[in-house]
Amino acid sequence: MSLQDSKSLIPAFGQQASHVFAPLQREIDRLFGEFGRGFEAFVVPSLDFSETAQGVELKLDVPGFKDSEIAITVDGDVLTIAGEKASETEDKSKTYRVVERRSGAFSRSITLPRAVDSDKLAASLANGVLTITAPKTAEAGGRTIAIQAPKAVEPA
Image (cartoon, rainbow, N blue to C red; front, side, top):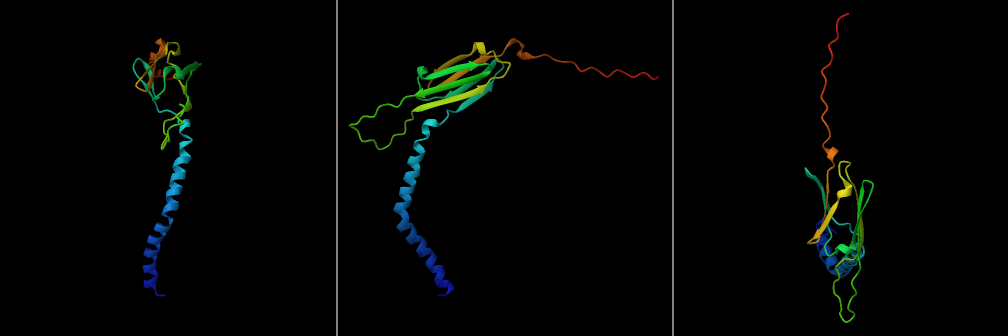
């Protein structure tokens, strides 16, 4: 077999192989696609944590959660947001083709800055976004320290 003949076999084998193994590839893709679905309940919601002139603001994406399914606690300077959504019962008279709506629990803990008054936390839930605000404490402004000029050393 010459070198030219071997080159011509590679494309033919590649085309034939993709045709022969196509059902197997589709099955592997399906298997890995379904494998990942079981872990969706453990996905942690996205969080934005920002500071304003007045205090701090946290926004957490919790679509489909009701306020009764979310708990917000503060222990020292650690703010914890936890939620749990029960799975809805499936209708046995239906044949489900795809089930992607998530259920399960999540928990996020954030260390609050010392300058935040955790006794005055406020939370609201609107359009699937949980917003938590906390004002800065009175001493959060800090103080300015003046830099002293070095004292002149007098000759001895």
